[in-house]
Structures are given as structure tokens and as C-alpha cells.
Image (cartoon, rainbow, N blue to C red; front, top):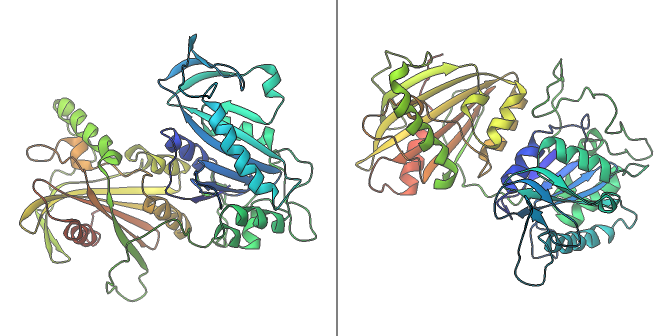
Length: 443
């Protein structure tokens, strides 16, 4: 399944939905189709967590936040919900949390049927923050709505169950549905859609979701035994994503580099602070093998002088990532990770810089990963010095960090820069993060 990501996250459970969909991988060998994640359908004023346009139907995924985690959730579509035997009390006229979600799903369904009246449409109500077991009445399970806690397994099962039309959409039908939801997404190339399982004009669909694995290479996390020798066509850039234009930087001949920056909110980096706390409490147990004992004292790059605090390499890329990036790295296409932690001065204010260089098996995998990393809210690579307690004094909070990313062949370089104290201003931090992309990291 090819995902088109928008920045909107309508519910607190939205990141879990994104992570579950990301783990399905690209290509029609699992389920195929195109997922519009966080889309605001045309003519509607409410965003939707996801609309999955798959070869045999359409599935609308809407997140519903529960007050607390639950071991057992009783979730009738009509009637009161109960979490571990306790009724979920709601204000207003809604009988249960699903009512508002179903109203929104009906609006989206009406939009889809305006261009494809015979489309098979189902709805998934994704609940969280966590539910171990969801119980629906038997009568509800015969209909077009499922209530699940969003995991890759539950979303895959629900999609296969709900999108069960006998004949697959043609490429033209899929493009019409996508365009009705988001005009830019309707421009996805015909051969890309055919690769996701939609029937070419005058032909038959490549494969039903339950059939065996296609040789088309997925993105994450499933990897074919032999990578596809030809690069896959790529969809147009998502119009909903806004990037700060990169500065023009001279690069050596034949060296392809894509780079840009953004400012990261504090909430996305809480995990780094937690890692630092854990490191301080466990530091006495020994120094991790990946930490270098003789780091290069200083290095100059982009007009900044960087003092190295930690440097090391690791083959376990996924173990050093959080959020959607962790899910993406479980596919094994990342063959090596190098990290470094540095201090510098930005406008007279001390700043911390975290740098990661991830090497992939091929350039297309690297490009796909950078595209995900560029999307706000998809996670980050943990900082080495924070993990190992190597920062002098307190570890950086990594709040309001500037981010920069670059693609150099099969290597993706990601940098974060945040002030150690005081305020440097976002553009100055961005310059430091941008400059850090040129710091050499020893293998």
C-alpha cells in the first residue's frame, strides 16, 4: 500500500494508526492500494485519519479517543460502550463514541459514491490509547463497520474483510476516487496504481490481497529476497506538506544531495529526554560498546566549530529510532548507523547537535526513508550522548530543535540542533543543523 501523508492528526490515537499503516509496506503483495492519511476530503470541514482506496473497495479509518486504556471494551454500534465493565459516559446526544465517527464516515462515503456509486465502502473505528480486546455484537460484525485497536494485523484483517468486492477497481476508477478526496492524489501515475493492484485499462488486476507475494519491492517493513532492479515510479509530492525552501549549497561533482530543515516541537522529542534520564541512572553499569573512547576533539563545518561529545556506530538501526521511523527501519534495508553528538555556539549561545547517518541497501530505500523522516511527527533517531550520559552537565531537552535532512547516494543524514540555554532564534539553529550535515562520522 502506498501512503500519501498529510500533516493533520485528528485524534490522539492518530500516530498509532499511521504506524500500523506504515508497517504494511508498499506494493500490492500484502493488500495494495493507496492510503490517504490525515486527509481533509474535498467539501468537508473535518479531516479523517485515513481513507484506504484498495483494489476491492474503500475503507474509511476514523480514530476515537477513549478516556483511559482498557483491557476489554464492549463496543456496540448502537448503545452504550463499556470499558472493563464500566459505562463510558458522554455528554451531548451521542450514545457512544462511535456515533460521531460514523456520521463523518457517511459524509466521506457520500463523497466517494458521487464518483463511483457502486463502490464497496467499509468503516474502521480505531480506538485507543490501548485496548487489549474489543467485543462487538455478532449482528454488528455482519455489517460494514469494525471497531479495533489499530495494529498492522487488525487493520489488515478489517480491510480485507470490508473491501471484498468481486471485481477490482480499474486504474481509472481508483484515480477518480482519489481525486474526489484530494485533487493532487488523483494525479498518481497509472503504472504506479497498477503496481498497487488496480486493474489496468482493458486488463485484469495483478493479484488479490490473499494471493502470494509479488516481486514488486515494498517500502516497509517487508523486504523481498531480491530487490527490484528497476526503480519504482514515484507519486507527485503531497500538496499538503509544506517545506522550508533549502539554501543552495555547492556540492562536489556527481554528488546528489537533497537537504532542508524544519523546527520540531517539544512533544515529539520527549523520548530523547527519557533516554537521557535512563542513561544517567544506569551509567555505572559500563560504557556501551558503540561509544568511542577517543573522539575527535573538534571539527569545523559550515562556518561552525563542533566539539564532539560522543561518536559510534551500530548495525541495529531500528533500535535507535522512535515513532514511525522505528517501524520503517524494521525492514532490514538499513545496513548501518553512525551517530555523533556535538556542542557548538550559535549567536553566542551554546547549542547541542545530534547527527545520524543511516546507510541503506539501495538509493530508493534511502529516498523513501528520508521522505518519511521529513514528515513532521514521524519520530527521530535517538541522540547517542543522551543515551550514554556523555553530555557535560544536564542532557539537552531537544525541545524546539531545528531539523535538517540530506540524501547522499544510499546514505541519509539527519541532524537536530537545540540551544543548551537561552534563545538563538530558529533560523540560526537551522544553520547549525544544516552545517552539521557535513560533519564526517567515522565508520
